[in-house]
Length: 155
Image (tube, rainbow, N blue to C red; front, side, top):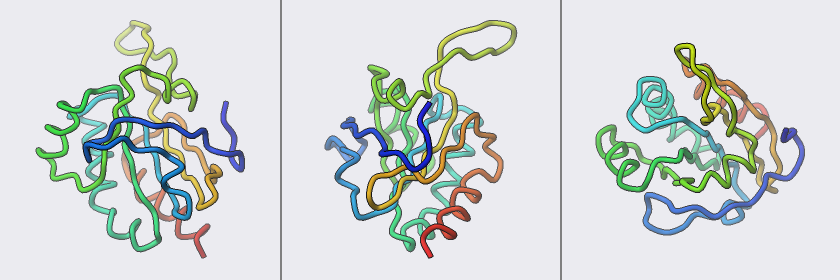
């Protein structure tokens, strides 16, 4: 399990901006990385739209927001376009970053067990250290809670 105040594992993933995004490119800024199961599904859409609505407030606090799932770029582009998402979504179709961040695991749904993404969010400081981790996120008001935490730590 990753812990707060440890260095966030660096990664490089394809991004909807058509260039690869590398975490170390964001040193000097706060970063929110949220891992979500699937584009255009009810919970993931609520969570993504909430981060999107609050994006100007995150940006004002010198913070970038990225969503990561194992969906491909075509799926991410469609999702972004449909909901006018103003931040990049990253593709982890090889499940490398999901495993690095310990958010790939056993899930239960409708009586069956399977491997999947455990909805989680990481708040990372300007030096690349994890400030806070939210595991098994409930989407309602989650983006706002992340923003409130960022406001406290960025003072």
